[in-house]
Image 1 (cartoon, rainbow, N blue to C red):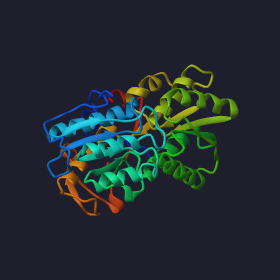
Image 2: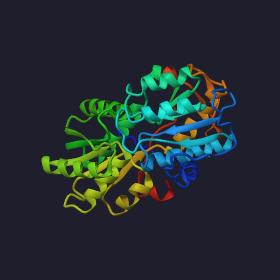
Image 3: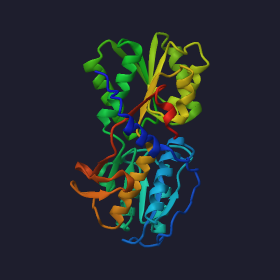
Length: 347
C-alpha cells in the first residue's frame, strides 16, 4: 500500500513557510545571541555547538540554519564545527576541544555509533549536555536523540516510492552514505525486510556506499549501472547520494528508464524532478530537525528535562515535544516531494 498520504493544503503551506529559510554557511564558528558562552557548564550556559557529520553538506547547512534560528530566539550562542570528511572517528577531536571550552551542549550527528562514545561521555562528565540528531550514538553516550522520523517510516516510504515507479517488480540497488552510518544501516535493514515481506518481485541486487561524497556517489552510480544491466531502480537514502545519482542519470542513456528515489532536499532535486529524471523522493524538514535539537539542548541545560521517558519540553514554533523510550524525541513523518509540490519549498 502506497505511503504517500498527500497532506492538506494548509499543512503544506505551513511546512513550506517553516522550510523557507536562507541556508546557513559552513562557518567553523559563528555566534548568535547574547547567551553565556562560559567555560563552565551550568543552567545559564546556553552556548550550543552543532557538530554535523561533515561540513559543506547542504543537508547539514539547512539543519544548522534551523538551529541558529532557534538559538537566536532564546538568546543563546550558536556555533558549528566539524570535519571535512565523514569518517568514523573524525569528530572526536572536535568533541574534546568543545569539552575543554566548556560549552553548554553539543548537538552531534554521529558518523559512527561507538567511535565517539568515549569522547562524548568525557564531555558529559564535565557537565556538557549531549544531544544527537539525524544519526545516533549508542544510547548510553548521549542525553537525548532527536530522530527525524521512525526508521520504519523512513524505510517504508522509500520502498513504496521505488515500487510504484518500477511497477512492483525488477532489480534495484541502494546507494548509501558511509558503511558505518547508524541511521543509514537501520533504514537499509528495514528496507530489506519490507521488500522481502511485501514486494517479493523486487530484488535488491547490491548496496554500495558513496561516503556522502558527491564524486564518489556519482562514480558508484555509474558502476551500479554497468554492473547490473537489468537495473530498474536505485534508492539513495542520503541527500548527497541522491543528488549525485540524479546528476549522473540526467545526462545518461538511463534517464527515464532507471528510476531513482530516496531522501533529498527540494533545492538539490528540483531540476531533476522538473526534467523528468526523478519522479518523487522524500525527506523531513532538516531545518526543523536542527531547530528541535537546539530547543532540546536548551531544555537539558536548564534542567527542564533529563532525557527520561515522559519528559516534556517546549520547542518554540514547533510546539511541545515528549521524550520517548531510550531518550528519543521524534520530529515527525517524512514528506513526499514531486512535480506537483516541489515548487512550494525552498531548502
